[in-house]
Amino acid sequence: MNQPRLDGVHHYKVPVSDLAESLRWYERVFGAERQPQFDHRSSAGVLYAHIIDVPGLGLLELRCAPNTAKAISGYDPVTYAVPTRADLLAWVDHLDALGVGNSGELRGIIGWVLVFRDPDGLAVRLYTREHHEFDEANADVDSPWLRLSADAEVVDAKP
Image (cartoon, rainbow, N blue to C red; front, top):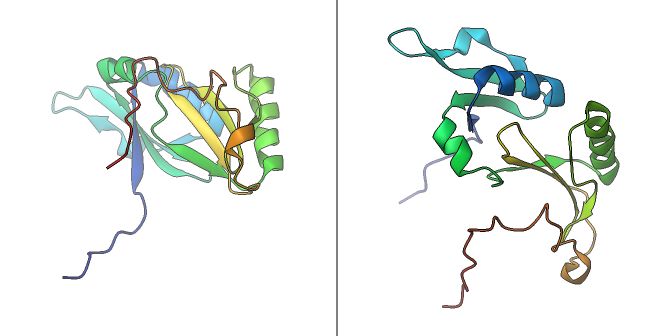
């Protein structure tokens, strides 16, 4: 049997506790543009999600889900790519200018990484496509920005 095709990611869904606050943050930090024609409303007309277009990423859905947002605070479900280390450093400057707390440039195992948090504490990671040689020994794995959340289980993957 042949594997059916996939064609990329249609959109990402981000749980948020406050739609208006998160919309302002994503607009300010990422230059996102709300697509009001795609707002999601319940049958009673209650707004529960915004669709935003993020330059270089595509569509994100900001969905009001306060319990989920709280439950995954600190987690990093997606790592976004930037082309080069210079681009990553430009993001550091951008975030600093906006007053958004961030890790600064960190050395990853094969590239450079930057971590910051959205209003609900969801970790946003940017990782360079430009890479250096595999270098686990000198990676910033002990950075508090890269540690697993306190309740995460590390499972030995031996067979």
